[in-house]
Image (cartoon, rainbow over all chains, first blue to last red; front, side, top):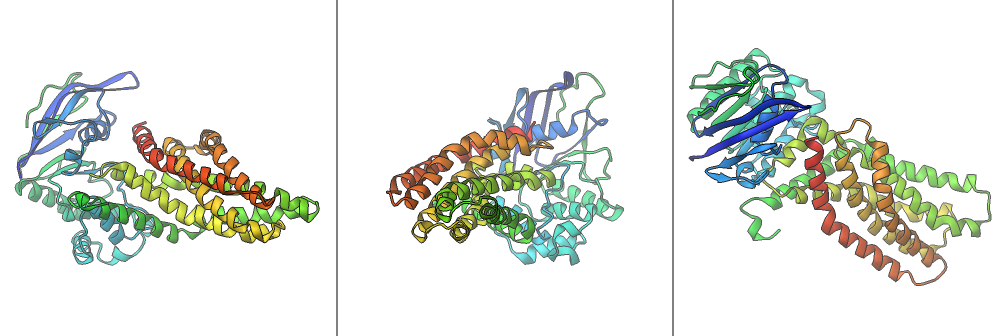
Length: 216
Length: 232
């Protein structure tokens, strides 16, 4: 599948401080973009704008050449966004959480595939217990198991390495590389520079007052 | 939910969201049963606190039951979106390729199924404590069932607006209580009319009309409020 998410002229101002202005970028199938920058430089804000969650103060998003209204479905149907909070409900089991995420995309899936995805991320035993009893890192792994199951080609991941141990971080790097190689696209906001086996472009926020146009 | 939705899977997403909410409510029984317990306790206290003749108590019963049910509903509203917001599930729901208004309707329906509907079923039992005559049990339960559904819908707008606030409880009450007033007037009115042997059909019809209006408008308002609150 060939696709392209473009952002043009994005402005972001918070508490009277300009985080970025006139920011443009383009992510297409087979691209990987690392958004880096110090705390408070607007990485998460940029990712939420790209997800269509946060309307930009100026500028626009386009999916496959079509300008999107705020939160348009064409983008959301192809998107997997993962924010700071893993999105794993404490009272539900990992299997139930994954089933709900699949259902939100209109997919039924089956428990065998979900269990395999959880085992893949080292959570075979925790699959049936409420996530409230899991550690922060394990809950993050539950969220990452969505990457194994989803059919969404564009992944927007905000600090996905948080709370992960070395093994899980390696596995995530492997999965990101594989996804990009298979024709998906990844936008990562992270302090950690992942060791990917695919080409990765970088966008540094907060280093110059006006980041230049970045083409990926 | 016809065949036209098959490609986006709205029916699947809607049913899964409803099932998820009911499952969560079942797992957190303490929180789910708190409004019902509050309702039962407060109503049980009225006959002790009001030392009046049973006939006079029965005259007060519709109002007491309705006000207490309204407060019990209010008590449960703050938790409607709180945990989903805290653990990030709400953000994911907002990004799902489904109409948000439909998904929040599933959440509100679950809220009513575990909150308002049991309140309505419990009310006749508690009516016995207040010396309510048997003839007004059914109108009371029907008025509470219809009315509490409206309360859940209207209250969810307030819950959505205050979801990001650390101490949103008081603000939530101040926001939604004025909107609860019409429901309270017609709801208690129906039960009161049944008590004095009058026609209560008109009150119930008005409650039904309020519910229809709330069903039509509230999901959109809740969805818009959530989008505002989550970006706040």
